[in-house]
Image (cartoon, rainbow, N blue to C red):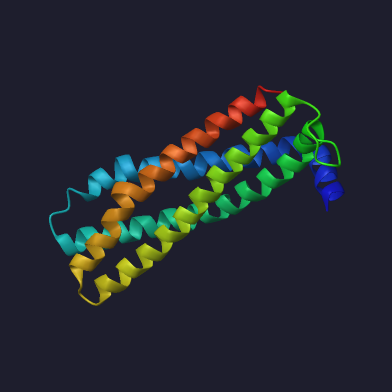
Length: 178
């Protein structure tokens, strides 16, 4: 499997990096647009039920758009992590550190991967909450829907925005590290 990933990266380096970067931009940018543009517009809707329905629909559209890019981002991250040979540069086959600088880069790669993983888990939780909010709306339980959607807008999306911008920054650091 490792050889396949190394070969794939070697032959499609530009495409893989492009797909990785564009996926991050679409995911993080989409969250920023929804949180700071759409969210503010939705707040202007005076009918609480209509506002919640529009918020649930907006989040559904966002999640539908970003989910394939999240998958692409994770797949390309794995291909790049293996294809760029971070571990081989840092450790010998027995697991002994052979280069401290390379090891720090290797560890930074893992930090970035962990950030994307946490963001993915948070996204999955948002998708579940949004679906529950939609069901609550259909049952006429406006307060339940409001609580479900409120947590997404106030905390979950902003957390993912901060993590995403951090991961993008780490990607730039890694790009300039070798």
